[in-house]
Amino acid sequence: MWVRFERSDVTEMNDWIAIGALAFVGLLIPLGMMAVSYLLRPSVPETSKRATYESGEVPTGGTRIRFNIQYYMVALLFVVFDIETVLLFPWAVVYLDAIESDAVSLLEILGPMVAFVLILFVGLAWAWRNGAVQWAQTTRQVETESNRS
Amino acid sequence: MNGAVPLQNGDTVLLPERIADLTGLGELGVAGELLAAFLGAFIIANLMLAMTGVAGPWAKRKITAAFTDRIAVNHLGPAGIFIIVADAVRLLSKENIIPENADRPAYDLAPIVIAGSALLGFAVIPMGSGIHLADPEVGLAFVFAVAGIASIGLIMAGYASGNKYSMLGGLRAVAQNIAYEIPLVVTGMSVVLFAGSLRMSEIVAVQTETTLFTIPGLEWAVPAWFALVNPFAFVLFLIANFAEVGRNPFDMPEAPAELIAGYQTEYSSVYFVLVYLGEFLHIFLGGAIIATIFLGGPAGPGPAELGIVWFLLKIWAVFLLTQWLRSAIPRVRIDQLIEIGWKGLLVLSFANLALTAAIVGVIA
Image (cartoon, rainbow over all chains, first blue to last red; front, side):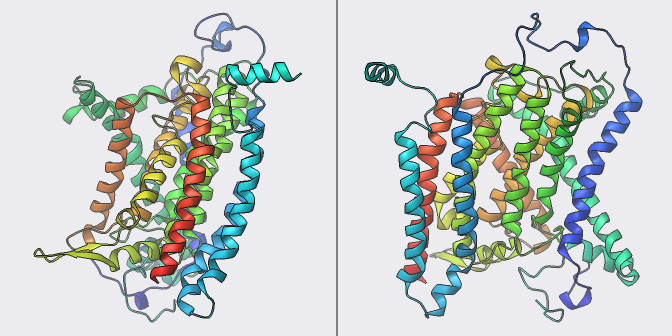
């Protein structure tokens, strides 16, 4: 049986109630699976079982290792561009309406956005030049650096 | 939108409303509304779980086998599909081994965050045949935001496992996610320029109602799907999406030869199931976003009731492409990955946005 609905037939509901319901279900399903597993699974504690897994070798060294500084650099760069993206969203939404309204010229709509993006690209170019988005240095770069110092 | 407008494309009746009307829950006020919303959410969640949890891993094995000239699972049930049920029971009944260095609350929460965030993204996806949970005005921004929560789950899993390889896997996963998040969202924004709205149903309606061109002699009206209107944006979005869900050629976080299994190394039993399920849900969510904003969502020939069939076909086409690349393309290195993201895709995606804006401005 397929019932075709008209908009006027049904009471309009709040979208966010449904989204909240899915968030709740999305939490409930993993928790339910955990509960089922808790009832099914055995528990045979052994000391060596819980050792850190390093492909069967005896674990060496700690966990809190030093890692590449580049992870921080790209994260900082991400924050800048993420905020830029957030600020561009409203512009993208009203863009079509603004053009069709004929009240403002294309240059007035497009210009500020292009200027805004370009300013951030100057920043990206600077970061690029300074190697913030470069993971490994080439042997040549390492040589130049050591010659300089 | 007021209540008296007749049904049009892009003004569809949502699933909770349909349920409320069929069951008479609508007369119960707020309690009925909550119950209808909950039932709708439950249906969507289970539909997606059946697709990603059962059909997904099975298809992955079958497709990979076909590409590498093997047979794969074929003993239990038709074409071996019941092996997934057996696998689920096996994994759920395994002992849950918590590593001794684990950082407890975060270690337990990470699988829930990874699986739950992916599931929440499906709330705003119009799947056709009336299966559409919610249609808020900020639809597209919402789905990107929710899919982004997974990064937090990944870093939680990597850090809390107390294993340096998990840690590196988690860091790589997040570095990769944030490098490709910007190109993904900015390319998605170029679609918004055409549609003039973030509402998912309107993005779909604009694609299906506009005709790009008519094939002469055949009377075929080619719909203005954004993949056809702007193929450049479509390719950019596909690449950024593969990196975002961590699939080949961008499957760095797991890189089995280097990092054991990345952030999921120390997870066993039900936790492993949830992390694995979360990854599959993210692949399918990526496919759903691509289908919705570039491939016309549930649109296709035939009556509108067939929408869900077309929609699932489109998602599976994207999934097939993912598995094809997995079999065919070697993995890139972490330094190449970061450079492709920040120096290549980022610049290209902003160029695409500016060009699209200029073209839309000149044509309109």
